[in-house]
Amino acid sequence: MRRYQEIALIAGVFVWCSTVLFLYRSQDALSMTKENQHELDRAFSTMEELQKQNLQLHKIVSQLGMLKMGNVSSAESDKLMKELRSQLKQCHGIRQTGKENLGAIDILAPTKEHETLKKKIHNGVVELLYSIKTELNYLKKSNSQEGDTKDAISRLSQQQRSILIDIEDLDQLNNDWKQAESKALRDLVIKRMEYIQNPKDCANAKQLLCKLNKGCGFGCQVHHLTYCFMIAYGTERTLIVESKNWRYEPGGWEVVFKPVSTTCTKTSSTPVGWKGESESKDVQTVHLPIVDGVIKPPPYMPLGIPEDLAPRLFRLHGNPSVWWVGQFMRYLLRPQKWLEDDLLKVEKEFGFENPAVGIQVRRTDKVGTEAAFHGIEEYMKHVAEWFDKCDLRLAKEQAGTKCVRRVYLATDEPNVLPEAVEKYPDYVFISDQAISKSAGLDSRYTKASLRGVVLDIFFLSKCDYLVCTFSSQVCRVAYELMQTLHPDASSFFHSLDDIYYYGGQTGHEQRAVYPHNARPGTNEIDLNVGDILGIAGNHWDGNSKGTNRRTGKVGLYPSHKVEEIIRIVKYPTYPEADSVKS
Image (cartoon, rainbow, N blue to C red):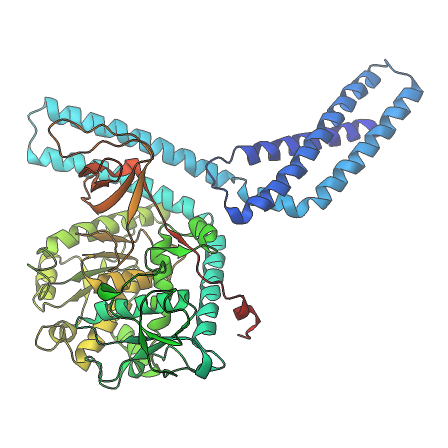
């Protein structure tokens, strides 16, 4: 009996080894980063050794089968059992010594829940296509009315929402890891920022002077400051902010937000204008102009990300570029105590809580110049879609319940709130008319206006979803700040006009992953796999517009046939920061 128990043990080890090896080799959908490639190579080496052991064990099991049939002598039987025990001991040793290596495989191995949701999503997409074909054929054959089309869209939208919920559930399977990794990355970046921003010897530290005097609104000025900070960080310089007589607050930036440095707040030498990274390398204090006037821009401009963090960011975040910008934004927008208290007080007065969708309706100085007019209905269509999905999820978890349709409304036009309340009585709108009035052109650069725009940005960033126009810098600041509150908030928005961009950014490019032949009579352009495209915008109808770098042609192409190209930049890694006590 003991021999047959050992045979069963061998079979179990064989199955275990074979299964893990199969799981490792079948993970084609998981990208191998440079950071974990070495670890996985060692794991694979261990698995190969285990496979060799399994083949030998399998041979012995066959021989033991002969023993059971009485085809071998007692001496041969004893010899076989001795070999078996030796092989088992070796296999156990390999498994123990390779435990750390094999941990990488355990992490990659899919769970039952992962596989179940993956199949459910696959089936949901297939069924959605069937439904689309059915609805289109019905509308084509019948004398369809407007109501028929709306009903068809409603049914298809319901299916789409269920698929999106499944995708969100799939993403939540890794939530513990994402939360931990997100915090680890944020803490690492903050530690590096604090190191370069607080030199022990300010008198001899290299510095970058940024003057907060750009003639534009708050969002624009914050983006100017962020661009300065990114270049200071990339060139290993301490950022010095000159903000006295700031148009929003004469006392300067530090009256509202915490100083960007506690040890180095003034320049140590006469600033010299920026002439390029290598040209200014030996200058102690350089003055960086606004992004529109910078000559020889360094590589540390958005939308690039640090080389050493890239492998981790690609695993964590859907848009690493905006995550990186968000970290600088978060550091800069640390409120002073009075502002922090004010934010908490207003939050309590508003009764703000999640779930909530934030909308920013920008009118006064944008319409007709930087942006087109968008009625409240355009915003609320996407708000309703988000809450419909929220209701479906809640009904799945607790039948008969619905989400409170809470909307934070930020606007510079006081008439928008009463219009929204009248047209959408089923929604709870959170807004402050005083903030809207202070954002008007006649009072924009006042303390009241500054407080209002800061409140709007902080509350918008705390919402679960944003509907706005990315032509608005305030909306983009809120979206950037939102990335610091979640492991991945890259998809928590809908823009009514532009895709996400950063003023002065490096080229935003995509790569064709599928070929495309332009249809005759359209504005489409041909694509070959591997073509590089400079994207001009997404039309939110399945098509994007851009320039094919290979052919030079400008036109439309299917958005699903391309992938984003993220620029990898060799930023300093500040190993010295590791020795600094937190």
